[in-house]
Length: 502
Image (cartoon, rainbow, N blue to C red; front, side, top):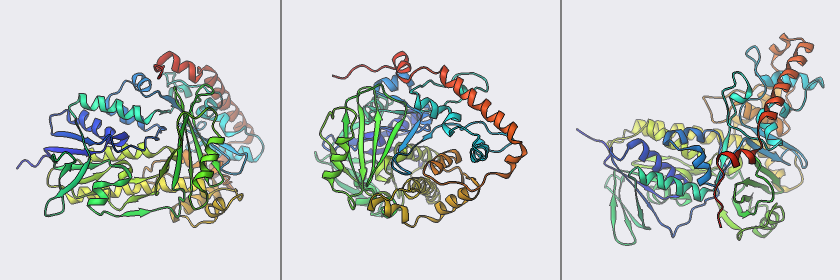
C-alpha cells in the first residue's frame, strides 16, 4: 500500500517557518506532496536572530541560493567569530573565532604547543596564530580561495542579516517552488481519535487538513504544547536570563566582521552590524534587574542613534520533552529556546530540517524513527546548553548578585568533566560530533579564565628552540594572509552591496 504523505502544513512563518518551507519546497519539488504555510500577519515574529554560524552554508547549499544575492537581499554582512567583552572580568576581551587555530603538528593540536611556549614566555597572543581572529581585529574579510596549503584556502565564515528580510527572501523562493501560503489565525485544532492532529480551523471558518504538521508557531507552541501537551524542560536554573530588550540603531562606523557580546551586571548586550543598521539587544535576568534598568543600560551603550522604540521579549530557556510527537514536529522556538549568546538559534532550526529529511515519515509514522529523531535533537540541545552555561559559570566576576549566582551554581556533570579535563592538561574532546569543536571549547575556556596546569606530553617531542621557530613561522604566515585580505567594507562594496532602504 502507498502510505506516502499527501500534505504537510507548516504553522507559522518567520525564519523557522520559511526555512522549513523553502527546504521542503526545494527537495520535494512540488511533486511528492503539497506543502502549505499558514501564518498570520496579526502575530508578530521574534525577528532578532540576526547572527549565524558557519553551518548555515550547508542550508544555503541545500536550497541553492546565490550567496551575493542572499547577502544583498538581507542587508547582510559577514561574520568571522564572536568577541566576548568583560566576561572573564571587567576589562577582559577574547574572540571565539571560526576556523583553525595555528597548524597542528605530529597529530597534536596546535594549541598544546602554544600552551607550552606561552608558559615559558615565548609565544605571542593566541589571536596572532588565528586568521579569523586577526582579521576581526583589523576589520578584514574575504571568501576562501584556492591557495594550496595557505590559510586563505580555508576561511570559515557565517553571516549577519536582517531576520525579517531573510524570511521574506525565503518565502519568495518557497512560493517559487510551489509552496502555498495561507493568511489566517488558527482558532481551533482538530484531532483524530488517536490524538494525532487532523486539521486547523482559521478565523474565516476554513478548515485545513494534513497528514503531517510542522509547528513553527514560536514560544506559544500552539500544536506541540497547547494541543498535544508535550511538556517542557526548564533550564533557567542554569541559564537564568529570561528577558531581552532589542532595538536597532544607526551605523556609526563601517561594519566589522564579527558579533560583539558584552557582559553587563545581570546579563549581556549584543551588537550585530548590518549594512543598513546595527542590531542591538540586552539579554538579562528579571530576578536580578528591572526592565527599566535593563533598557537604560542598552540605550546608554548604543554606538548610534536608536531607530525604533525598544522592544521587550520574554523567554524561558529550555526544550520540549519531545520535539516530534505523533504527527507533529516542533521547529525553532516551538521546540525550545537557547539564548543567542553563540548564535545557535537558526542552526537548531537547520538541524531539525536536516534530521527531518533523514527520518522523513510516511503516514504510518514509525515510532522507532521518531524516537531516534528526538534522541538526536535532545543531544544537540543539551551539548549547546552546556557550552552556553560555560560562559556564565567560568568567570572571575564578583561585582553583582547575578554573577555571584552564576559563578557558584552547580552545573551539569558533563560540563564539569570537560572543565576538569581541560584544567588538568589542556585536553578537550569532541563527543559524538557535538556542535562545538575542541577549538571552540578551547577558545572559550581559555577566554573565560580557565588555565590548564599542563599540556599534551607529546609536545615535548620538539625542543624549545625548534618549537619557537615553528610558532614564529606560523605567525608570519597568518600575518601575511591577513595582510592580503581586503577590508570587510571593500569586500561588501565589490560583491554584495545592498540597495539603500529609505
